[in-house]
Length: 397
Image (cartoon, rainbow, N blue to C red; front, top):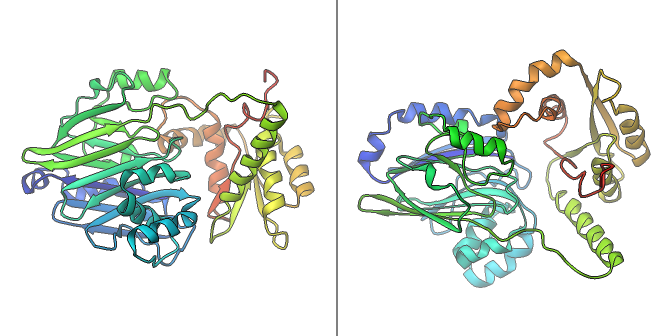
């Protein structure tokens, strides 16, 4: 996880008229500093202000951002991981003739786009959000993974968010400046509540574009934003990705189970592409146990991977006994943090503030403590959160 924010101005007048000013931009950028503690870099150009807080998993020494393209004409700010990026490099080198200087997936992304254009995005496998912009401020391109795992928010002055009332294939709009950030709180402009946007997000768990604020939208899962400078400002087009990710298949159940098991194993293996130590969240449920099981088969047996479990004061919710039993059975180094009602009451507003979700997900309060605990030991974790339905973890399934 990394955090970035930036502003692209269409002109000197748009930059000079930005009410919060450079100090306001820096204050807003600092609100996403918790997303990355490896290094921080600020880049100030004539028509662009950029900030990146990096949490590095690959090529810690060389993957500093914003990262320039080989020709020096573009910069990329990236958050997330592309798991197949090393497999894509031969095709990029063959098409572009340029060699790679780092092992970072950030470099793969910008060189792949330079070589193949937006078609390159269809080849990416991972969870990510990134922005590519021209150094002269004339163009911007933003893209987000198809599952929408990594967030990406936009503030466009004068944007009528009412236009995003239905999920269309594309939207066109104009603006004098474009602000972007990994979190809404990283956008420097003053925000006003949008009643419709708030209700749409509250009632629709998977609202793809609208947010609870006027002039603020999110790039939808799989979406691509392209902006070019014109005489009066930026002309922008937001392309959505309306095709379903999940498709119905036919055939033998045994074949489907074998295919799923192979894909699941590959998915866990992909997430071990890291130069820093990783751990795993482990409860007594099916989802985290399956992830942990695959990890126990893949991880280096000479150095047990750390597992992290949160325990509760209420016996009906506490799964520490089963989680610790399974951790020892699978060969993990278990770590446990216990919390009570007082701790949950304290962490709930913090969890809402960091997640920026208006739905009252109470498990976020416990995850806040678990994450605070785990970061003392590792840089990242694997988790089965959200996979109960897929792995038949509820009696109704």
